[in-house]
Amino acid sequence: MSQISETSPKHCAKKGGININNRRRKKLFFTFSTFFSGLLLIIFLIWLTLHPAKPEFSLTEADIYTLNLSSSATHLLNSSIQLTLLSKNPNKKVGIYYDKLLVYAAYRGQQITSEASLPPFYQSHEEINLLTAFLQGNELPVAQSFGYQIVRDRAVGKVIIGMKMDGKLRWKIGTFVSGAYRFNVNCVAIVAFGPNMTTDPLPSIQGTRCSTDIIRYTE
Image (cartoon, rainbow, N blue to C red):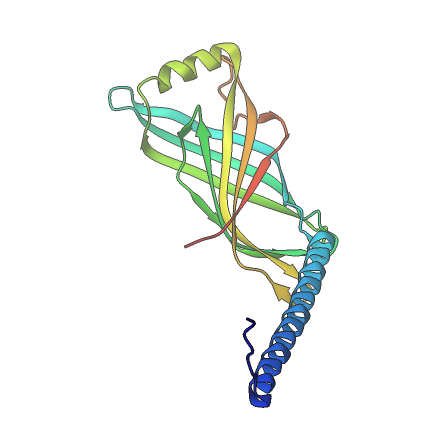
């Protein structure tokens, strides 16, 4: 025996209404998905076109005026070093705001000067700027092996000094200015430092190109 069921016209109308609403939702979902996919594609193409290259730094000169221990017993260092750097923006369509620049010198992993702050500045497209910093250290504590290492380097005739820069920058593309990014610069200077050299300053032998790392800035 078969079962016969009756469906009223009102029930059919409700069922048809549900199908219509589902079709509308699918259409809206497809429209929004297409819009956002196109927007992401445009952003990606702009990023590929204008993705900024890292700024380039090179150490042109490093002159040591003072580098000696005030007391071998307490291992306190006095130092004074003059640095000259070139900063280049390699981008053709992107400017750079340098909001913060801190520079210091290091020797064999030890900081041998206090940090010096350079004034903030804007660097236009493909612009090159000359930066100078006079670094000093007054009775900075160093490792017990510092004196031995300096004597050994002096016997070899040269000393390797590292220059470190930490800072904060922002990119400028047209009227748009990005959020802040941290950047770290590492340079190496080879300075003539023979046993018979007594006249200040002790100049660097050659200029070097520096390495630069950029990290998204978070506070």
